[in-house]
Amino acid sequence: MAAKKIRIVAVGKVKEGYLLEGIGEYAKRLAPFCKLELVELKDEGPAKEAKRLERYLGAGTFILDVGGRHFSSEEFAQFVKKQEGMLTLIIGGADGIDESIKRRAPAISLSKMTFTHEMCRLFLIEQVYRAYMINSNRPYHR
Image 1: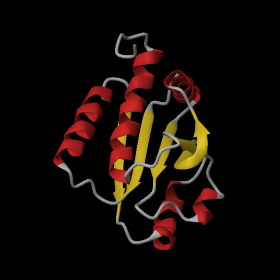
Image 2: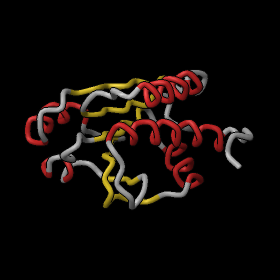
Image 3: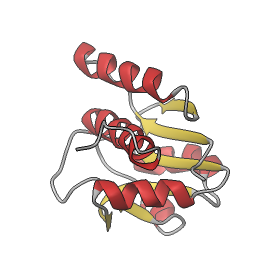
Image 4: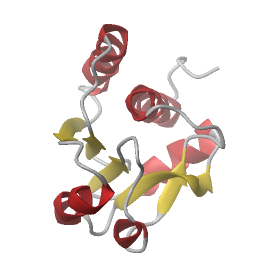
């Protein structure tokens, strides 16, 4: 059983139309599978952001960090499948996530490469959708 609710908490606004369009498309595609909540926090530097991020910490919360655990898409699908209740995924701003938050939540990574935090939002939501497709044996993942 996969998480019924996915919350993506991200610092900063996505300004590029093509990214907003992609994020919107995957959010729409996810609607039949889970309740998706997208939370945007003001970009005000890691220390101030940490205070706002604290309220999202707890069981089922993971931060995105280049040094975090790497998954294949199939492994990520199994990871999502094992989550119970709400899965919260946190994407930091341009300056990353404060160490105080890194110490309190396990980290996962989309890649060893560095991406803009706006692109990470699109890549992450696409991988969440792919996970649901894999877990429901649908042909999206080839």
